[in-house]
Length: 319
Image (cartoon, rainbow, N blue to C red; front, side, top):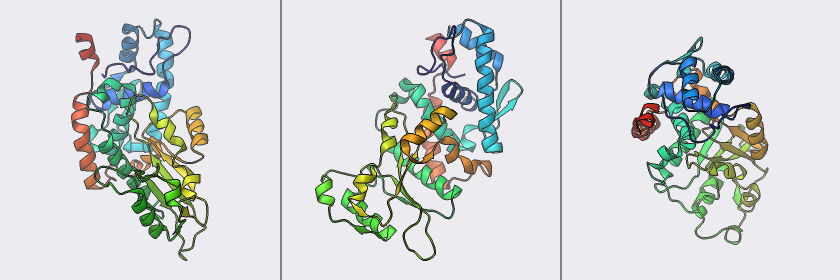
């Protein structure tokens, strides 16, 4: 069992001050990454021992809601969900490396709830950002095979300046540059918050089709900075750089899973295509090996040392 999250777990006496999404991620991680079963009674005991709850019945009420959410997640992914729910018992369906796509999203989310663990691997998030962009591109291509995806995001290994990004994008879309790039951007600009472009082309090749400019926010900085990215890329800015025949819509991709109210809130903020964890993982419902072998290998290599270093409840007790 993982150590309790330092975010989203508040002392609960007369009201539940434990976030349900954080609790469910913690349960998933405790079972999947430890490759060990976990029962509702064991979780209640841990919540009591750590003085999150005083009442077993009140804690059990929270766990009832958590089981409903976990079952919802399971129903979305079917056999692609890494846990099996057997009554009030959770058990791993397979080891974490069998479905690196799901493990990747879960680990990125846990980094928000266990920030000290995340920071122990440094504060350079370029590699995880590149991996997440590639993962999102493959997820969209797999779920929407009639759509075309173009990667634009800047990185250390793909350090194209904005001028080159715009030129390549216009050639790919068949659009023209506005000629105002120097007026509206700086020489140091990289991608202006644009990571992916997604379009549903028609056979005639003409514009007037669905077009999304997508920001990929992998999170894992421990301070929710990803929320500020929901308003990027700035469509007004890009309209000054590319002479779009039809104004595009914004898209946003994140590894987090949300409860209904938060999901709708984030949709309103993005005002476009919102891709959370379970939309991105939709291909897992058909096959857990849907990622390309190259991306799967890279993600597993990135994940392995982090999963091995996850803090356990036993380690916390010893400390």
